[in-house]
Amino acid sequence: MSCLLKSLYKNLVRPHLEYCSQIWNPHSIKYIKLIEGVQRRATKLVQGMEGLHYDDRLKSLNLMRLETRRVRSDLIETFKIVNGKYNINSESFFEYDEGRRRTFKEII
Image (cartoon, rainbow, N blue to C red; front, side):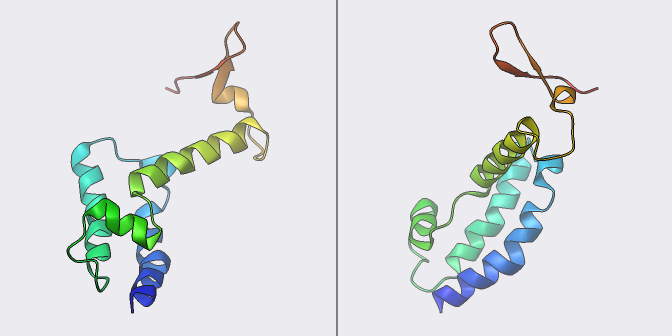
């Protein structure tokens, strides 16, 4: 039963929570908690997980926090832009300083 619920969550619910997260990524703690609460509640529905702490439920279900997934997704997108995987000029997003370190270019 737990495998079915996990599969349903990963295939039907989580895509809605992560859709275009690179654009609308919540910065307010209030919204982060609301979105994370959906996953928190879904993990409680798995039989035998009701009494466990949230992090323990995630570990035993082999899931990660949605906030961690958003950061990971941001890093992957940055990697793709910098390495030319998209037809986007990386200089429109990043500029290099004299020490050859990358810095974020503020877009206004």
